[in-house]
Structures are given as structure tokens and as C-alpha cells.
Amino acid sequence: MKVFKILGLIGLVVFSFSLQAAKYDKKVDPTELYEKATNHLKNEEYRKALRVLGKYTKSKPKDADGWTLYAFTQRKLKNYKKAEANYEKALELDPENKIALEYQGELFVETERLGLAQVNLNKLKELCPTSCDELEQLRKYIDQEAEKLL
Image (cartoon, rainbow, N blue to C red; front, side, top):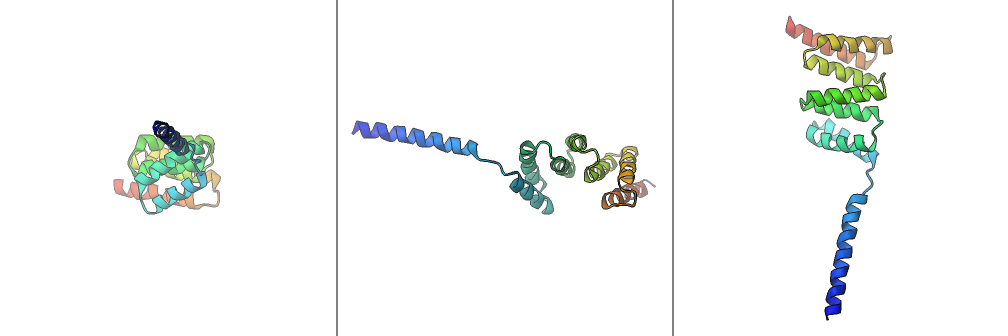
């Protein structure tokens, strides 16, 4: 009888360890994380998106778009310093990332640094000589803020 109890305990311990191992062996699918994050963003669920994008950027640390979305989410939550650092990371990985330049420019507008926003607008003008959505969106964002100041 004691032998069965000991074997049962050993089995329970082994089962417990295998559950713990499975918990940590889960493969993170970056594509799933990205899709999940973008769905949260579409629904303006910024806190949920932030958690998912934190995992995503750890799994794909060289993805400038991931860092851009992570920064965007931080900005929407008014975590401006973290957002700024993440935009810088995105632009370090891809200096011509038009979305990062637009969103970083919007951050500069929101933090009352219109001169820096204008620098980003000028970079977008170089990247989009005949215009592009990012250029027009940032121009509109800057113009709206300038009108408030008048």
C-alpha cells in the first residue's frame, strides 16, 4: 500500500513538473501576437494591446513596425517618455519608417514641441516628394494644433 502511495506521489510530482515545463515551453507565435495587438488597437483597448506588444517586441526585437505600434500605444496611454523611446527604437531600426515618423511627429505636437514635429514633417516631405498619407496626416495634425494656439 505504501509503495502505491509513493508511486502516486512521484507521479504527481513528475506531472506537476511537466505542467510547469509546458507552461514555459510555449512558443510565442509573433504573427498571432501582432494580429491580436492590432485587433486590440482597432477596439481602442490600449492596455491589452500594450501587454501583447510587449511580448511581440521581445519576440521580434528588430521589427520597426512592432516598436512603432508599441510606441503608439504608449502615446495613447499618455506614457510619453516610453512612447518617445520606442519611436526612437523604431527609427533606429528603420530611419525611413514613414508611420513612425508621422506618429513621432504627433507625439511632438502633443508634448508641445512643434519644432520637432516640423522636422519630422520635413523628413516625410523628402521621403514622399509627391505626397503620402503619413505626410498629409502629420501636416493636418500640426495645422490643427497651430490653429489652437492662434
